[in-house]
Length: 136
Image (tube, rainbow, N blue to C red; front, side, top):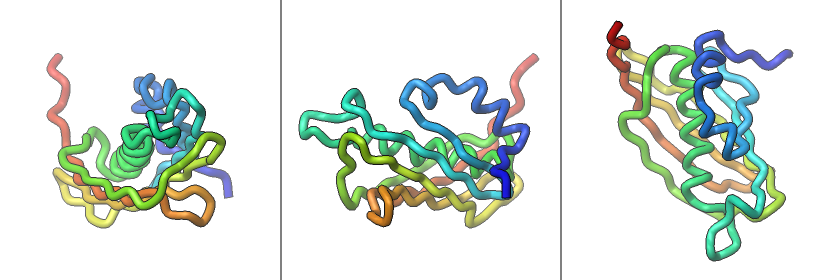
């Protein structure tokens, strides 16, 4: 099966230089599910020599945004939390898998798991809310 990224998510990602600068690659985003990947490089590490928690959060949040916007276009993170289970080190490839658990007319709720191979790195839970249409 060929990975799919919905048209709205493709447009959203085209206007998201932050994710690409960090090295986040969205692999798929459709029907309330998304996968994003990041290879940890030395520039993304903290003073302990491990991947900065903010980078892991950004990877999870990007996967969340893609899953959420695949079913509720124009939604943005309104609330989120993350639990870190193990550190990621230089050279590791992190994979974030997001799954929408609830979609309403104005909000979406999803869980994201970040792994390095079979090892759990972090769990993220987020709620997205529908943005107002842009003013003309």
